Amino acid sequence: MLTDPAEVDSTRFRSVLGHFPSGVAAITSLDAEGRPVGMTVSSFTSVSLTPPLVAFLPGKTSSTFPVIAERGTFCVNVLAAGQEPVCRALAVSGEDKFTEVAWRPGPHGDPVIDGVVAWIGCTIEAVHEAGDHRIVVGRVDELDAGAAVSPLLFFRSRYHHLAAA
Image 1 (spheres, rainbow, N blue to C red):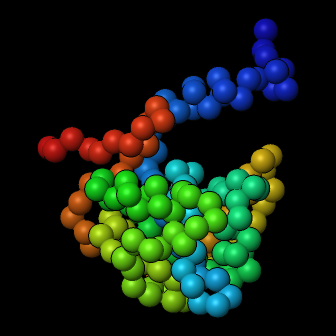
Image 2 (image 1 turned 180 degrees about the vertical axis):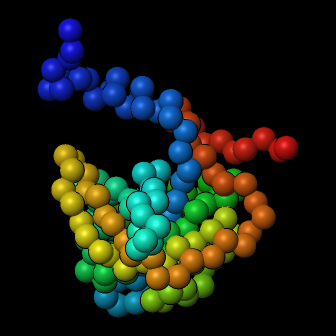
């Protein structure tokens, strides 16, 4: 017999889905005063080749996403295996997250973090409500991948990296 979705325990749900490995990305933008803002996500995906679209899913309680939405542009920074400190800095709420994060202006002026595996500059195309999250679809305006480093991975509530080949 199927479980009623209202009866699925959120702790078990999180634990089971934690068995699916994901990459870690930093979504960056600028606030109204031109200061960098950012957040980390493991829910990032490509959506479409034509037109080129990507998506990320911020929680509705995020204090950073409304700032990004107001600006209308963002940069996806695919974090490298050695960038756990960057990930942790951007995951903190309410602080100057970029104190120890080196970056340069990318498309639309949004931060491209030094040492990332790849970056993708986007304009918000659509925002959809989805439970306790939002689905943010971005139109890709510019992108690059240059760093020959492994990505930062998240699996079973811990950070990992790819084993050397």
